[in-house]
Length: 275
Image (cartoon, rainbow, N blue to C red; front, side, top):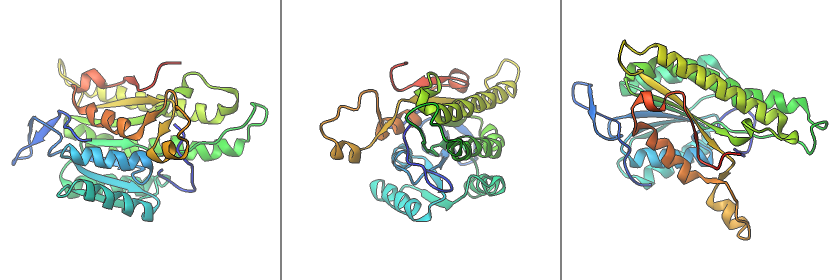
């Protein structure tokens, strides 16, 4: 997933079936209406698309990003695209575990529940050859792609479990399964983030009651690279084979609530052909 890395953190319509909130706070089979979904990295292109798709499906969306300016622009765009939707933004440095926990606690306190955490913090560094790898790239990617996953998963595990139908969604890259020589740091960081997410899935599995489903699910969506309309406009001659448009990714994210937790927990879902 080739998001532009920066200093600090964070990088259409239709309804996904989940549980609908009722007046007493219980949930019945319905749509994303009534759900509360947090989006980490909400200011980036994928985050912007996710805000729109989740809001379109009826969810209350709580976005976070380290860049206050682009976060405000993303929230405003989502509200404009979906008049009446509840879309909020919080400037959060996900490299700070205390700030991340505060964000999770504040989101649950203000909205009464948290039904999802979508992790869209991105970054990329690479080299022409394996020998030319700069380990400073690893230091950067370790923070962006691993630490942020650790902090968000630890902060949101309990709220997602309390939801009874929570989702933790990580977007990963096909390169984690078949690393190339010049992408050693990036592929290794993505693979570590996947392993961490699958460990969270095991935690949800072990929290399931006897003969019952897990209270939440953690899953990995795998892409080759992400594509935006701006990229298409800049390079109309290119076909972008195997790329996933950010709108298609957003649809896949919203669809994670369309199946029971037991069916999606611990899965790796490919949005691009397997290498």
